[in-house]
Image (tube, rainbow, N blue to C red; front, side):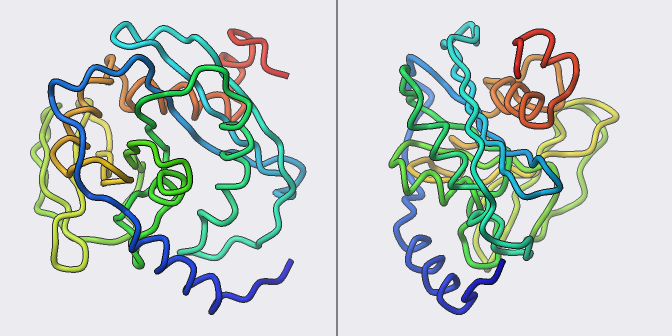
Amino acid sequence: MTADYAALKVQQLSLAADVVGEGLSRDFSPGFIAGGDVGFEQQGTIARGVIVVLRWPGLEIVEHRIARVPVTLPYIPGFLSFRECPALLAAWQQLTHRPDLLLIDGQGIAHPRGLGVASHIGVLTDVPTIGIAKNRLCGEYSPLEEGAGACQPLYCHHQQAGWVLRSKIRCNPLFISIGHRVSVDMALFWTQQCLRGYRLPEPTRLADGIASRRKGFQRWLNVQ
């Protein structure tokens, strides 16, 4: 697998310029909220894109889709979205319930060039999107308190890109950032609204479990 990374960088910067960093509100009333994640199969040659659609506000699963797509790029830090977006888009195109808000397990604009996988898929689908990553890719933040709910602003490129949130006591924090068509404050608010006692918010917790092929999720959802 080879790629023209100079051309991909130009494409990243172009897509990043299309990201809208405003949108949603506390009064926003979605019909459906979805979570998305990508795993890999067959020694990393197949990307397994997963989107789980949940009904708001109860967050009951109404649909989940899995798409397997050949991987066309090697893993190169900073270009992960080009490996993952084709599988996410393929799963998205299978949906019969179109979500009003999409939470992606990955970075939004908290990325060296402002285009993590959440922003990439958000721009391509033009749906309000939030990036919820398990690890920091870039940016600075002040130390967090130990209690659940502690948060600090996450700054990238001298501006606030999102938040660092300790969603559960004795757990590592989450790195929440603008994906597309959502403000920095609403990215935090809607992530908090989707927490159900686990480290990850429910939409990405379910997508992560299916994408990672965890046995409990496979039995529960009868994933093949």
